[in-house]
Length: 90
Image (cartoon, rainbow, N blue to C red; front, side, top):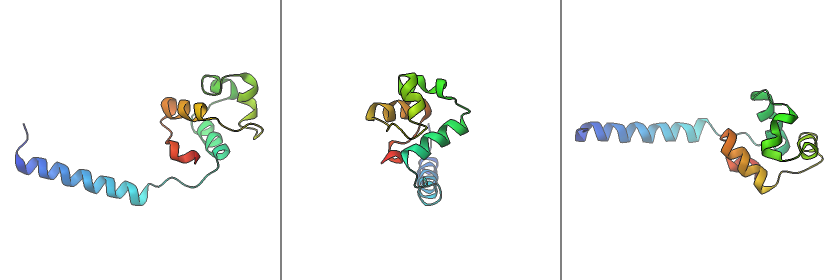
C-alpha cells in the first residue's frame, strides 16, 4: 500500500506526463488515406495484410490507392488492431 506522499507523487507524475503528451505528442493533421499509408509503412503491411481490416481484396487495394474511403467499421478495426486513435480520421 502506498503512503499518502507516494500517492501524491504518483498523481503529480501522471499529471505531468499527460500534460507533456498533450503539448508535445499531438498527432499531425493527415487525411485518412495518408494515415492508412503511414500505418502500412510503419508496420510493413501489404494490401493482403489489410484484409482483416478492410474486408475484401478489392477494398484493400482501393483504399491505399485513394479509390475507396474508409468506413466507420474500417476505422473501428484499425483502432482495435493497431491502436490508431479514431480522431486521426476526422
